[in-house]
Length: 479
Image (cartoon, rainbow, N blue to C red):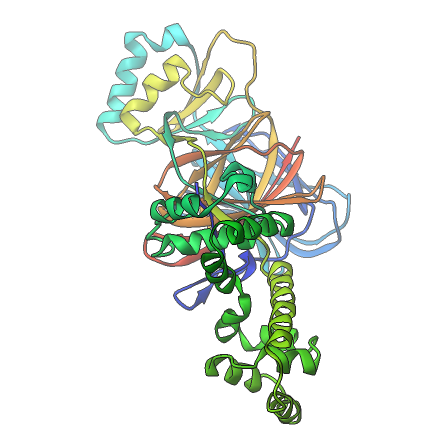
């Protein structure tokens, strides 16, 4: 378990010269809906809608089929706060339809609504009868797809196979003592770590990992490590501390960021720190200061500055640059995480068997499915509900779908293949933030996120299998 620094903050994550944007988010779901989830075709149902944050004009509610074709649309010229409007809907074609709401430039994907021809109810024993098996076999023979839903939370469910994977996660701190014993860290330990730490996907040399560990440690831990190094091998300690110096990062910095730092630094400190420095560093600094200031600093450098003053100035610069990076980029690091339990959605031929045995651990034992135009409901004998009711809406690209919420986790199903993704988690009850990092997620994988909150926002930035940057914002509220 050896971390490496995440060089860019989430809101500026760059891939192939493209940025994954991070949107600003509100802390409420702007529209709330109330309606019957299951409806027979040809019967008028009512969708009640209201806004809880502000007044809206030209609000459009649409029902979309699986091909995203619009089959119903209703425009409300005005929707005022806390005033409920009722929309009458009558659909003659059975199916599962997505509900979307548009207001101005924003479009929100809400939940789904079902219209069916005939309603059948089966207990688990009845589902094992010849009648049901024959019906199911005929549907399967003609390639009729099915949709499964939880009878309690009305969420689309996916009978799935459990699998344990190992991956990486990002943290904004490093629990340093979990990785090495800093009190006994000596030259032999470090050489051993350097030999073992080699992560070709991030850096070629394990030494860089060690340096990043020290950079991201607390000041106290960093001093302890460096002090022990000097006791065991002063020459190696000087080598390490020189490599830790952030001054060498100046040529890699964005001009605007460097200008912000240089504007806070005294001319004398800046001049002293540039004594005997590489030409690339001096040129980068002079490029980002005024010609008048450059002349003052150049004249000061030529006065013959003692080496002790230059070292002190470099240390001061190191602290200033480090503080800037911590403030604007953070102390986010990438570390191998412990094994994670995920689920792979089963294919169509396996799903009915899963339904029969209740192989959906994070939902209730009451399920229903849509075969062709009919509704089939099945129930287990258990009374316990494993899931929670929730409202959800998503914006932008459809990267994931909420596949259930329990007392301990939110379950997300990947809609596409994901090369890697960074998920910003915002708990708007406690105002706490966190990150989750995913790699090599296949389509239809279900991932449990161990976050429990009445209200939560997930901002997902991802690179798909074709290298395209995508973004999705999910806002979820427990009922």
